[in-house]
Image 1: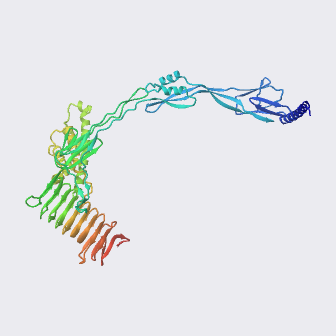
Image 2: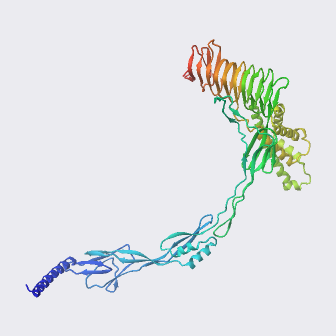
Image 3: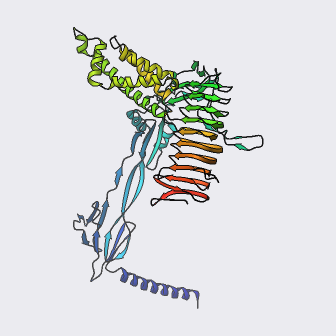
Amino acid sequence: MPENQRKIEEMKENTSFYKSYMKRKNSFLSGKAWMMNEKIGVKDAPDVVPKIHIDENREDIVVIKNGERVKDPYFELTEKDHLQIEIKPSISPPKCDVTTDRHQLTAFIEVEPGYKIVPKIKNFSPTHEAVLKVEEYKMIDQKIGMVEVKEKLNKAGIVYGINEAALLEVTQSNTHQIIEVATGSPAKEGKDGYLEAKVDSAVKKVLHKDEKGNIDFRENQQIPTVEVGEILAIIHPPIEGEVGRSVTNELIYPKPVTAITVQPGQGIGLEENRIIASKIGRPLVHQKNQVVKASIIPKFVQKENVAIATGNIHFYGDVEVFGAVEENMVIDAGNDLVLHSSVNSSTITATHSIVCKGHISNSVFSAGERNELLTRLSQLNSELLKQLEQIYTALEQITQSYAYKQSSVRQNQRSLLNKLVQKRFQTFLDQIKEYTQIVAQNKTFLSQECIDGATKIQELFIQQAHLEISVDQLKELTQQLTDAQETTFSNSTEPTSISADSAVNSTLKCNGNIDITGHGCLNTRIVSKGQVKIAGCIRGGKIFAQEGMIIKEAGSIGAIKTTLAVPEEKSIQIEKAYEGTELKIGSVRLVLNTVHQNVHAHLSDGTIKLN
């Protein structure tokens, strides 16, 4: 086929295809409306008219049909109609707000650039019923200016620590941001004065090894002792803090610092920033808040035997005896007592604890029993202190009052004091009498502060009740009783104990635990308000332990009567108990008729069970 003929045939074929396509297209679009690139199209049909529905959620859509605004949300559309759709864009100006933290150490700017919300009708495919829906996009069109940013800062009073680079970031921000734009200088806190301890005042349990490496359980208590001139503690002065500055240029002051205040007691000297021992003895350093009270509990050391030649020992404080205690001697320690050798037919008493590293025979040991007396003294001391504070406060208020100062006939302070005591503090004088009487009868184991306080209060209120008195004298007395409370009664509630190697025909009584660390006891009476432990044997005698007992061996082959007693809720543990050993738990009694191993005696349903 010639070329020209071929082209003519192709044109005829394409024209036919186009006509067929257009026919199908017109058939598809007939009676429909559509939206493409914000332009609406319509194709009429003889039997169908396209309907348009304005999105009822968008009141900002304005539709103008043939020059008139469409009020009905539903309307019809034909090819002849001229349609305009208008939607106004919304505009948001840039925002810039300044805030600070609660300490005004940091300033922030919350920035949001200005933007325009540009709306347009969403495209929709050809349809008989169409809904005009809107889609929006955000267009940044205005940023905050540097001048406005600085005006905002000035208005908020932000003048210190401003970061210029952060301000530039604010002006260039394309998003909603919170930017830190200024930073103050926080106050640098100082440091309170503090105490650096150079000695440890606590009594410690220390286990010692002999030359062969064996542990000696009898050498288990170490009482600290200081020599004259030894440094107990170093007082470090406070370090002042540094003043800070807020972003509004206000000064920020650090918390005030406090120095250590030292109240030296017996045996204490102060040299510059050091607390020094001026006597030999046990150190006591107590700190409450920034007040430090220091004292030395005196210590009596006996190198040789305690015998008739040396005399009995009565001493307030710690006592340490390296020699033996011979017959019919008395040792009375006002605190702890350490005996390095044997004790024979003597009376040994300590307010706190006793350690005896030698053998005890035919002697009486008592530890902590006078604590009940100390407790009563402590109660009286506290009550007297409380009432004294109330008395001098009331007296001070009366003498400082306008009525008293303007009175033509003023009563002296002694008369006012006597009336106060008689009317409002009726038990005060009786308590003073009881307190001073107990102190007078027990001076040997009471501190000098306690004795001085009792003497002073007796003078002011009993012996010299007719003489004039001042508020300052009452305050001084209050301080003396406070010192007595801390030096004499502060450890009266601490647990006491007796630790001994062995005992024969003796009596051991203690408000706390009793430990027999060596061979054991023979025909010995033991009374403990704590727990009793015997590493060896107990043959003969009686033991009562308020908190139960643990014994390696009790009784003997010859059935020597040995009585072991505890309260009904406690137990008795014995590795080996011989025939004839008597067990008492509460009011229930049981005598063993054979040898028993690993006894754990306790009360169950009114009877004593052995395991």
